[in-house]
Image 1 (cartoon, rainbow, N blue to C red):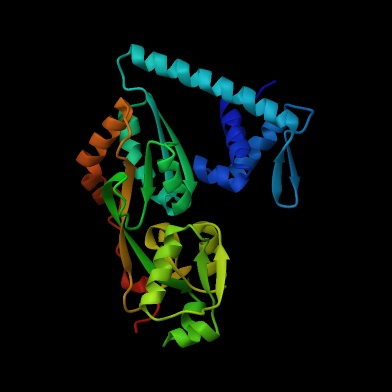
Image 2: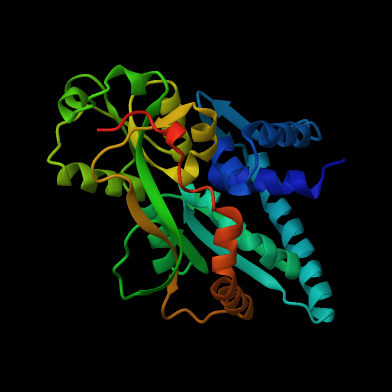
Length: 316
């Protein structure tokens, strides 16, 4: 046997999510990287760990046993690391986050320097939609959550960390089809691409369209921000998307911003936590770090967040 801790960690995440795509998102890896590590781990065993039927992943009984053992091994490794760091009088512990899907473009930048200074802190991030993020907070499953729309709920404390701007977008071909780009043409010709129910982006998008007096549009509904982005680039239709999730595609010209009245929609990225939660020393340390450093982090990593004229398709 010659498996690695990294392979066990990746396999455990695949078991927990029953999805290569979801595991890759949560681990901040590419899908091919996850698949390769799963293949390498499987090569150590004669009995299958997983079965793929259609597009679904099923964990075999043997795979469940290995996952349980892997969790025990990883927990022991974490415990050893914690004890070592604590003996050195360093901050140790684990922070658990739940974040909306585009939050993966935000949160890592607010963690980088904190983790560099505090190597004894472990991070767990669950990437999902807004509805499930709020449930995870209410059920005390995580320490902090990251959302990107208005939250008027006395149950939670919050800190604004970054502006979130959403634009109407198409690919470079579809953006040229209709220079006048009125909503009648939207209704009759081109579908709008929505996130699934429970998504904060969908909620914002529907509120904007309602304000514009637009309904009855043809729709395509997809489950993740990445899927929406790929559909827009393929020319399936248009969407209203957070700029932060399409930075590279905007810069390369694969996606174009289409100017409209009332856009961009600006909201705030908020870090939230339950007001009654007894924060651990690690959680308190992270909050202090965030409050003291969020302005510098915004300046260092997010100065690009204003699109240039060459990124725009058409004016009204």
